[in-house]
Image 1 (tube, rainbow, N blue to C red):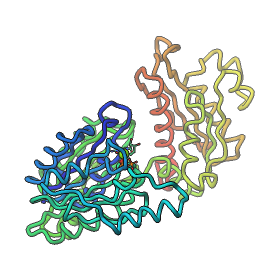
Image 2: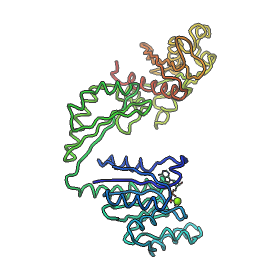
Image 3: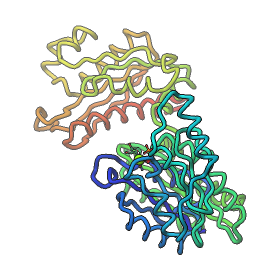
Image 4: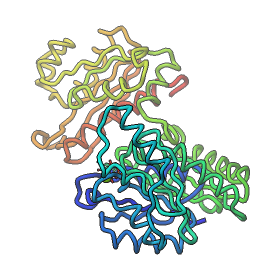
Length: 418
Ligand code: ATP
Ligand code: MG
């Protein structure tokens, strides 16, 4: 079965709006084992829309069109669909009554152009849109069943989940010789794409029915496994076998799968160990704490984060000896370790972690140029220290540093970690 999506709107082509709808639909379809073959974006141009719909109607089985269902003159989608099919648009009296009633209920004046939203191509079916005004329209043109959805992302998502996906599932279930797919994304941090590729290089030969892909989603690197089978059970079994091998090759480098995020994984390690954490953040200035606090219930484990930005803050808040900072430099292994130890002690926490670094563009030294970051995690007995180089972009250095801290916590705080 061939699936396509067409997104319409001048705003998608002049750079003012980022298309949110195609990725949403593609992701939802993919989660059901269906791969979208073609994704097209067009301006609000009647003849371009008509010819695209004609082409889709010849090659696709299932199509989604986003946008252009509104009441304004630039909303051309259904007119284009009618032209592509060679049928007129007609007013649907039930739809018109529903629109009038909706406006009346909200005390909004019904203008003539609002009536445009009640006109659908002959043979089309209007589906109630409980998320907004314009209905979804289902309309077959030749080979393709088209699903016309409003462009407003909230409405698009709602209708996609409630109306389009069940229809897609029914079509998939009825497809003979259908390929079943199952997928998993394994997420790692602090390991480049080529290193990841090298670690799992034996996977494709051992699992020929599983596609192996790589995706950098900085600062994360993802390994994507896509298994195919003649039945769902076969696809799932192939995926499970490949995933087990990938996990054993990657070990603790994998912090999570699919929707799992690093902050929750770090917090999960702390919770599982019944441990608490205090942070001292210099170059990340609270980013580590902010990421952790994005997870509900973070206060179970996160005691505080001290933003020790200036050198004297390291002394004022965490009691570091100013002469030591002067001697070692604020961005150094010694100072970072002293900060981690001081944070732990002050909080009475299980773990103390600290991060210092040169975020740039200024600063840096001959040994520690811009992009150098020091991390330390201590439990009072053992301190784990790391030094990284994250390049020259300020945002990148700060983000990578914060993720690295969280990953250090995730790996080291887990019960039974070395
Ligand atoms: P309306 O009744 O609001 O006119 P519509 O179905 O005609 O709905 P559009 O006019 O195309 O939809 O877009 C409505 C709003 O949704 C606009 O703000 C537009 O920028 C936004 N939008 C449209 N398509 C997309 C998309 N693919 N991704 C993100 N935003 C979009
Ligand atoms: Mg519109």
